[in-house]
Each structure stands twice: as structure tokens, then as C-alpha cells.
Length: 232
Image 1 (cartoon, rainbow, N blue to C red):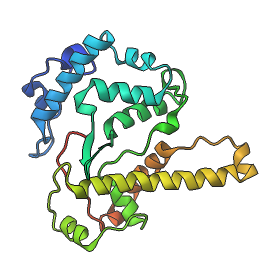
Image 2 (cartoon, rainbow, N blue to C red):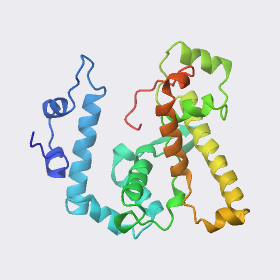
Image 3 (tube, one colour):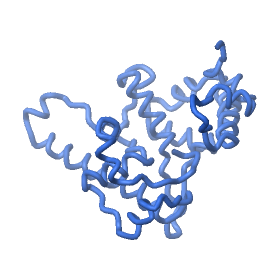
């Protein structure tokens, strides 16, 4: 339709009407959190123009092939990517959208050019709805009876609720433990070491996401947590 949607000059001033037209549904169900999403687009557009000369490529180059530096740049520059909560008095960062942005750049460029990051292993899995569900289905995670009942009842869990934070945090730690175990097996196996495998938490997340899509009907016996949020 000729809409320059990838241009920060366009979405820095996008209207609600333009947004709803672009993301119109084929059903009667409208995209949720419209006002928040429009606000996010405007913020990102304006800050890309102001801080990075109108191109996010400049942000990537500024970080000198460091995923950790790029993550810090994204979360400190764009409020809508600063996915933090307070857990028992301690501020914790999940950074789902910022991390998946970096992971997608790395994957799309196959770790070359703009996708070259010397510390890509710094990125964790992306704590959202589906990965906790599939980890529970695989019996990697176990939900308490109280939490499982709440999820099966379809009750919404508010952003920042202790249950939401525990689900997301446990998912990150579970994937980290899987990563460490597989990494150890690779390091202790001569044949695997010689294959020069590319392996990290991003790869595990991609695998779990694809598994979830392929076996969705079976996995649905485990309910997803329901949280309305801009962060995932």
C-alpha cells in the first residue's frame, strides 16, 4: 500500500488511525494495547532520528560488535525496551524485546557484517509466554498447584506480579542450565568439538519456539500465563 512503515520519520509521528489500519485484523478482534504500541513507535522513531541519525544501523555500529553494549544502549535509550521489575526488593531486568532484537540481527546476518557480535553468548533466552509453557510441558519447569489452578482458570496475572516474575525468571535460569550442560558435553567430546558448533541460549530458544509451534495442540494441555504488557 506504499506505507513507509520501516522509516523512523514515518512512525515517529504515526497516528492511532494509521496504526490500526496497518495492523487491521481479518476478524473482529482488534490488536490489544493500541495506545501503548503507538506511543512506543513514536518514541523509537524520534530517538532513532535524534540519537542515531535516522538509522538504527548507526546504533549497531556504535557498539563495536558487542551484544552486551548494544543491549545496554537499547535499554538505556528506549524506555519501551527497558523491561525491568522489582523482585523481593531487588531490581531485575528481563529485556525480552531488546535481546530478541539483537538475536534477530545476529541470526539474519548469520553472525557476519552487522550481525557480528564477539559476545553473543551474553544474550539469554527471551522470557515471554510460550517458552515457559513448553518448558513446563517438557517437565523442565514444574508449576505449583496454586499457580496451575490460576492459569487454568484463565485469570490474568498483572505485570510485575510475583508469579509473573518467577515464571519468567525460572525460564531464563532453566535455559541457562540447559546451555551449560550441552556446552559441557560439547567440550568433553572430541568429535563434537571438531564440528565447531554454533551454540548458545538463542539457539535453544529458537528450538523451543519451533517445537512449540510444531506440537501446539499437544502442548495446549499446559496453560500459558496471561499478562498484558508492552514488554513481550
